[in-house]
Length: 64
Image (cartoon, rainbow, N blue to C red; front, side, top):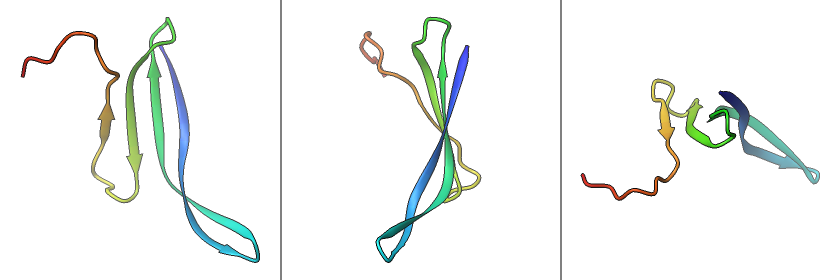
């Protein structure tokens, strides 16, 4: 299983036509051996104790 990591950045300001960015978190994309996304996790500094997780859409209907 492979994991990709991406930085989450927000625009912090602009001065003399140059943009300034702050890194505010990390996005983890987990993939199975076939390359399909199995889950996505987000960790960011706006809510430091909260872990957010997303899963890809499944073909079967939700019964809950």
